Length: 433
Image (cartoon, rainbow, N blue to C red):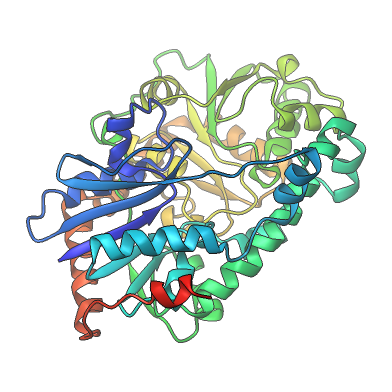
């Protein structure tokens, strides 16, 4: 079967492009695994900031979609950042040109952030969409830990003008959620992996078929196992999050203060995914009169798998603070390594980790509960280690490469079985509109 992916990343094609730091590493891993299936001819379309011809890497073929957004002046840049484009005709024509060239049996779209899903309106072949996050739901939690006024007061004039501020990002989120709902409304097939995404799919795509499929992690995380730190007096926490407001950085700062000043705990807290001088850090330190350095919080920035592994394996506890999540790859990676995990009971996290058996789940945005959970682990570390071992066993089963690859092939086959129509593109009709 010939499959065409539309993806936010180049998947395994990043190796050809020499990208060092992988974003969306699960797609790279799934791409590599599906290449082992001789019954699948895999093609991957993705946005890229340079004009590059289609290329073959391994057993897959890759189709870069050149993102040629140009801004004539600062106002147009601001307008583009805030408004976005719901159904960009130029981009959809590019998508359909790739569809015409590949002539796939089935199209698999990874995520709902981009307008890829609109192609369902213009082709007569089946399209399945994998739910990664969900902009519609995330918008409800966007200002968690903050409010709109906080972001307005603590934003520079330059960031207002250029649109590089959180209020502008929020406005763009709202526009993206409109597009997402339109795309999901016309979708017939959905792939998810948690109770959270299954439930929201029942609302946003009530007539669609829902298929469960787990994700393959990056290779490095299958090959390493966390071991209890012999120096129990040196506490090191690790968190992997992005710079979005709803990722809970304020909970980390508040929890660090409680641990340091209320119960006099000495620790080091490493955060991957955020730069020391990033907008998010400056914003939080303006609102909350706490300096990260005072509480031994270290920002590692965006790092590759090797450095990330080194940080997690040398830590005592993995902590996840997000206010909204589907299935956190950070938690999944921590679980398969076997490190004790504390996470927030939000979104799809409870589908990943069982509370008080494989880790501890606490209410999001509650630094006192988080500090208490950390204190529980510190004072009952053998139990924490046991939870980590339990979590590892579950993660090994859930992220089994062969089973996931076979499941994806099975899903593709089931969808094709429901669709007997031949390939037919409507791109010509669209181009003439």
